[in-house]
Every structure is written in structure tokens, then in C-alpha cells.
Amino acid sequence: DVNTYMRGYNHIDVSLVPLANNLFNNSKSQLKLIEAGFMKKAVICSGVMPYTIDGIDEDNCLMVSSTNRFGWYGQMRRLINNPNEVDYLDYSLHEPVKEKYHIKTVTKARAELYKSLIDKHNS
Image (cartoon, rainbow, N blue to C red; front, top):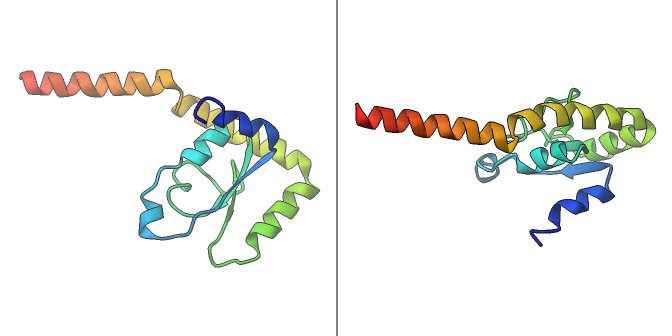
């Protein structure tokens, strides 16, 4: 439920986030990447929009091409064999996500937008 959903991340080391590359999915948000980042979890995801908004392959996540049918296996095996890379990826995703999507940052940007719209309307 909504009150316990995020606790599920406490039981994993790596979040697997597959998504087919199509128009519908490309219009979705990158929420799964953001959630994993806030919870300091490494991510293996499909190399498609929306995950390419914040995800950077080999930097803060590992991406799998939709044309590579063995990519998921390869990336999972890579992290199993290199646990230090999991630590690197979870930190590398957490740092930018916590700043960009923190409620204070989002609220400030939203307030500035509303103020500019009100100012524009009143002039």
C-alpha cells in the first residue's frame, strides 16, 4: 500500500526496470529511476525514454538495449561479479536525484513558476 510501498526497496540491492520502447512507454515518467535513486539502489534499466532523462549508462545506472536479448543477464551477472560497482552506481544515482527531485527543490521551482504566471497575468 501507499504507506509501505517504498519499504520494499530495503530488501533489494539492485532495481531492475524494464520498459519496452514504444510511444506509450516513452511518455511515462522516470519515477522508478527516481525512487531507486532516493533509496540508494543501483539500477539496471531499459535504455529508453523516460529513463534516459536522468539515467546515464555506465555512470549512474546500467542500461540494456532493447535489441540485446541477453543484456539483462549480462548486466545482472556484471553486478553479481562486481559488488563494488553496485555501491558506485547507487551513490552516483542518489546524489543527483536527491537534489533535483527533493520536495524543497520542486516546491521552490513550482512557486517560482506560479509567481511568474501571476505576474504575467497581472501585467
